[in-house]
Image (cartoon, rainbow, N blue to C red; front, side, top):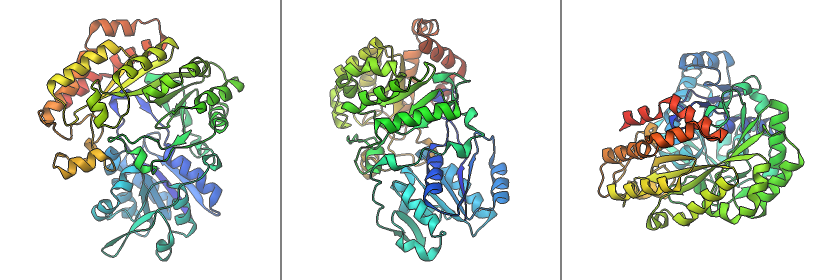
Length: 474
């Protein structure tokens, strides 16, 4: 049985500059298959890393002759790339079994199987066990009714099998399969965060989130459970990626760094390993969690944490409440202050375009961000991703005006507000970036900052013409 896991050609998110991430989803899947299924030949194709266009991908599939081809979208905006990759697979070999999964296809399983005949099977939710069951049974049609967690077509009818139970104990998972892309590891980089010459790896320390923000796909996808790897296991993976593959920048891709003793335990585990100072890592965190863990921040910084993305979202308490964010603007101010005091780069995320937004409320947000003065500000448009409460409400009320999935990238306006058209929301997004980064004082302070990381970020942004690309959208 030969399985080909494909990362199709994709557009990178220009707001983060020039970067090339490892295909974490499929290398994790590949490693799990190796452990759980006998006599399986696994091959991974990462088109961006291997500089393969669609024609080259077709040639690779033809030469590989796989029995099963699988590709995951990760984000809604990559839906068409996945569909095209599987369409090519069917063109080369109509008998090959084509599989996809991930958050978008889980949320749209019915519609996707009806719309894309090139997709044979959708793996819903957590993919490892389900995909292993599928491969173990050779992808035989007669076995499909007995495999939990899949959706597929039987004639003109779409069948949704019962869900697969979540994995209990994430420490039991194998290390992500970087060995399956070992010839490509040196190409994975994040220029703005770590420079062009620092290989970087994605590490997963947990799955899910205990919160239920209306715009987030994560908590529903993971059944509103927050499952953690142990601090020791997470630190082991970081050490492994550095020692085995030279990864000096680690993206802890948890949706939420979390709170409680876990953060301090992770710092302790990393400090035990005495990794060199060149090994640094990035994490996403809630503002309230940073405040609750203020005593652990010096230790975390010493353990290599040098960059945190905070979900600030809004300056209006009523908006934060409607988004079910459960934080306050004052907590955002305190969190940014704490990060800066501990020499941790404070990267803040803000969302515009919610239903009650007006030109005046967005102007107030710009003032708030200027006063907050994070090291880096990232503005996004409220995007109704399938599987979120925002999508359900927007579709039900007719607010969703654009179903082109490639626009679901948080920089295209998909819905109007009560007082702003989609075009006006788009203009406001550009206005937010122009207001913050158009300030020559802020630019010069960033480009000539005494803080090495802040200096690199601002020089990188100056060279990637982010503002020009945003202006083109507006």
